[in-house]
Structures are given as C-alpha cells and as structure tokens.
Image (cartoon, rainbow, N blue to C red):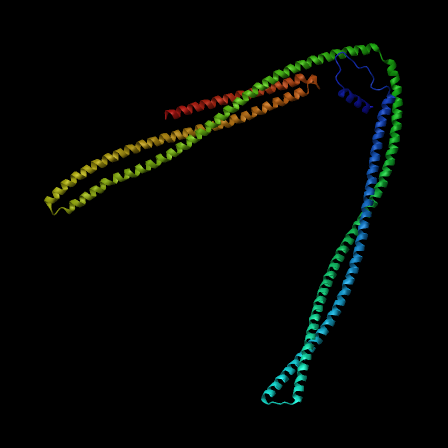
Length: 517
C-alpha cells in the first residue's frame, strides 16, 4: 500500500498543473484488484529479469572459460608437435655432425698421406736434379761419347718428367682435399648451428608447454568454481521463485482485504462532503496564486536592491584600489626621505671634519710662529722685520680661519637643524604610513566580509526563488532572513564608508604636510 501511495504521489507531481477551478475526479485505478495485479506483475517481472540476467551471465562465464580451455589445449598440442619436430631436427643434425666428423677424419688421413707422397716426390725430384747436375758437370769435365751415358741421361730425364707429373697430380689431389676439407668444415658449422637452434627452440617450447599446462590447471580450477557458482545461483533462483510465489500469495490476500475494506467506504461516501472539499480546494488554490504573485513582486524588489548594493560594492572596491596606490606612493616617499637623511648625515660628517681641521690650524700656526721667533733671536733687526711680517700674516690668516670656522659652524648648525627636522618628518610619515596600512587592512577585511554578505544574500535569493513553487508557506521566514542579511550588509557598507573617509582625511593631512615642507 505504501508503494501504491508513492506511485500516485509521483504521478501527481509529474502531471501538468490543472487550471484553477478544475478538479480531476477520475480514479487512478479501476479497482484495488487492478492496482495490486499491476504492481505485483511489475515486481514479479523485475525478479524474473534479474534471475534471467544472472543465469545468462553465469552461463556466458562458463562458456568463456570452456572456450579458453579448449584454445589452450589446442595450443599445447601444437607446441608438443613442434617440440617433436624440433627433436627430430636435432637428431638429424647430430647424425649429420657425426658424418661430417668421420669425413673430416678421412680427409685428414688422406691429407697426411698426400703430404708424405708430396715430400717423397719432392725429395726424388731433388735427387734427379742433383744427379743431372752431376752428369752435366761430368760431361763438361770429360767428353764421353758413349751411348750408355746418353741412355742414362735420357733415363734420368724421363724419371724427372714422371716425378714432375706425379708432383702435379699430388698437388691437384691436395687442392681437392683442401676444398673437401673446407666444405666439411662448413657442413660441420651448419650442423652445429642447426643443433643449437633446435636446442634453443626445444627449450622455448618446453617453457611454453609448462606455462600452458599451468594455465590449463588454473582454467580447470576456475571452471570448477564457476560450476559451483552456477549450482549456487540455481539454488538461489529456486529460493527466489519460492519467495516470489509467497509474495504473490500475500498480494492476493492483501487485495482481498483491501476490497473488503473498500466496500464499506464506498457505501459511506457522502457527496455533500465532496462538494465542500472541492470549494475549499478552489479557495486554497486562489490564495496560493495570490501569495505567489506577492512573492514574485518581493523577489523583483529585492533583486533591484541587490543590484544597487553590488554597484556600491564595486565603487568601494575601486576606492580601495586608489587607497592602495596612495599607500605605495607614501612608501616610495618614505624611502626617498630616508635616502636624503643619509646624504645629510654624510654632509654633516664632512662639515665636522672640516671644523676640526680649521680648529687645529691656528694652533699649528702659533707653534710655527714661536719656532721662527726662537730662531731669529740672534739677528734683532732682521728678526723684527720678519716678526712684523709674520705677525701681519698670522693675524690675517687667523682672521680668515676664524671667519671660515664661524661659517662652517653655522652651516653645521643649520645642517643639524635640517637633519632633526627631516628625521622628525620621516618618523611622522612612517607612523602615518603604518596607520594607513593598518586602516587599509581593516578596510580590505571589511570589504571581504561585505562581499561574503552579498554572496550570502544572492544565495538566499536563489534559494528563495527555487522554493517559491514548492513551499509557499515559508515566504515570511525567507523574507525575515533576507531582511537580516540586508541589515548586516548595510552595516558593513557604513563601516567601509567610514574607513574611506578616514583614509581620505589622512591623505589630505599628509599632502598638506608635504606641501608645507
């Protein structure tokens, strides 16, 4: 029954607003039986949809796992076949390697035999050459014209020719053996490479086979888990079906009870009460419309006030910026006054040094005069003349130095006075700048508070405009909140104006002092 009431409220909120004076007297349902059957079918259809979705997902997971397992088994079989072919290739390569080794041994024995025959042929050729040379020498020493010697010489030449021919054949055989030896070495190298590649591919295939076997074991375990999960899901589905049947039975019993309760209510329904309720509803709707119009007017006036306050706040912000610029100029002036004070102090130190020098000069001149006077005691006449000259010069120098020292003393006094005045003025300007900075910080803080108050007012206006249609009875409370926020904002604005007046007053006093100086 609670769900039925919520559905009816949602339908009432989502439906378009009826005109004032119209009352929808149509029943949302023909009977309680229709309502219960409708919502019961919706609930049952949701349960069926969830069950079918869960069953389909579990079956899809099982099929995916079985497909992956089948693919992994096919991959394992392919790798096993490839491993067998690699093993056969390795065996063939090893047999070819053995054949190449045997061929190499045969060629080595042949090469040794050929080398030995070559050495014997070379020795025979050398022997024949030596014998021919001996015969030639013997011929040159003594002329023997017998035919036996000629025959022996011819026989030696024939033996030499046969030995040279044998040597050529041995060389050809040696070249052929070398070529066969190089070919056997290449075959051996190729056989070694083939065996290494076969061993490497066999190792890789073994690793793949072990990995695939592990994956197959894991897939079988996951398949078993999915099978158990499927069994559990089927059990849960059976429980849900049983609960659904129980829920349907409870809906049927509730429907029958509601029909029993509805019958006496229909009999007790009075048309006069219905008409009175319709009249009251029309009056309430009219009052709600008037309240909404008044709220719109209040909202428009308050928005105008907010715009005015926003413009005044912008003006106050611009004035605060001007005050900040004036503060920067005051700081720059204080810095320039400090530099000028340092220069005055340096000039004062220079004047003090000059004053000390002028004060020590008369004493030096007096000492010099006494020394000259003591030197000229032996010559009276000359001493008198010199004394007169020196006294005149000394008196003139003393007068000049006295006047210079007086002038320097006066300048030093004036500089001391100026220094004191500048120091006092600098301290006053620094104090004024500090006070101005403090006031500026206070004004900025108050301006931030005013902005926050303005934002709060705007937010409250937005909330008020949003809640006008939903809660007409809260208009007076929202208006009181907005009035209190406006009062706070007016107080902040008065504080900002007072601060601006104080800053302008301080700025005028400062400009007056700087103009007088």
